[in-house]
Image 1 (cartoon, protein in one colour):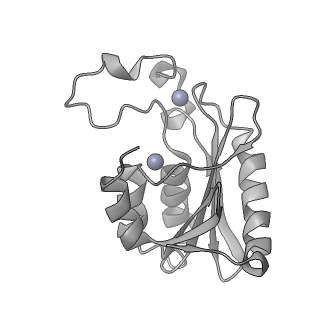
Image 2: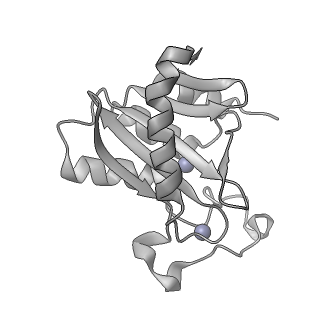
Image 3: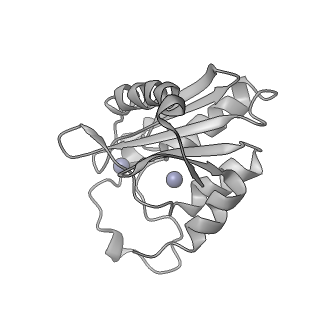
Length: 161
Ligand SMILES: [Zn+2]
Ligand SMILES: [Zn+2]
């Protein structure tokens, strides 16, 4: 992992600003997230978290995560912003996703940008690595961090508070 220099951060901040705007249209009621996938300075896809197909019948945003059986692997309610962005990028730009950069942003309760925790979502870390996305960017308290997706996946499995 590498914290970007002030100079490098300027470009990344623009993508995070955009992710913030996109997240405001997320239809998840638990949390609002946005994701941007960039290749060679061109945004190839962007999306936010929603129930699968945005189907109200599949909405689980108010379910208590502790109410699920331990075998239920993903207790989050909606399709993650990164999952959706990756799946759509694969469909629409299958030749451009390899080597791309992914930026992820979660909003706080007042829909402001919030600083990210350490990586922990193993669903998205695996997907990003498996589709040959090269870097995962998160904005932490101490700056914008650039992770190699291989490292990001390992760190996600090692997460502890
Ligand atoms: Zn939800
Ligand atoms: Zn995720």
